[in-house]
Image (cartoon, rainbow, N blue to C red; front, side):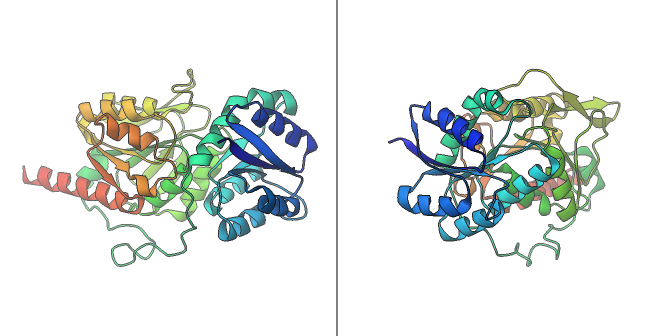
Length: 359
């Protein structure tokens, strides 16, 4: 069975190019094209598509309004097509919050030639979306019985744990919402957190800024040579690999614009392997939802270096690819539901801190 795709975009040129790209794939077919959400609404009923590609900014009905109604009334996999602008990135991040599986950025240069170069990327995202687990949006707050009023977990209250330990996180498809749920539970005295999320340049800064506004900890796009501090999270910029390094007694960030690894830059494997080499048993690895294998081998290196590793479970992943691969090769120590992972990580760190104090 071919993946049935409905294309929604107000640009006739983009519709044509997307139709050509998708139609060139042996396992896909375009079942309809729509210039706006009003036409798309009727075509969804007629064609029953497996995946919808949706332009971020649309006439007649705002793309976000349409997406919100769609995910409420007829949830289905949606891949957003976004412009590489600050406004475009903000709208795209909101679309992911509303339930879109993923997004692909429009090229910066000549639209037609650029889009055609994106053939493999677009096809991969549609394939991934067709397999994604689509859930109704969460409307219930975090459990206030164990979390603070702001949603964060209790403080660690052990300076050694906060300053000596590090939390190293990797994610891909579905990861923007997973990372948000993970970070919003972190208390202000948690260890420094380094994060690689597969995301193109131009989006990671907006992503970090949005998280910084809702989390108790400070969240920022990583810069080269920053000291890693407790209560801070550093997100790999879309143009570079993020690595952990040491400068004297301090951990610092390092950016590298080398070749993509596992077809990604930033790559989770690159971050995990650097943490294995430089932090070892002081690191706690966390692998979240995502397609593919990036991060599995790096997480195994982390474990072999003495780190303790967690993976998100299948039932709460949008795509159970990266966690599955890490679990399959024995790279993980514990597996848990997304909402439980922050507590699991902090409980492990607290136990480690108590043990160190008794020694």
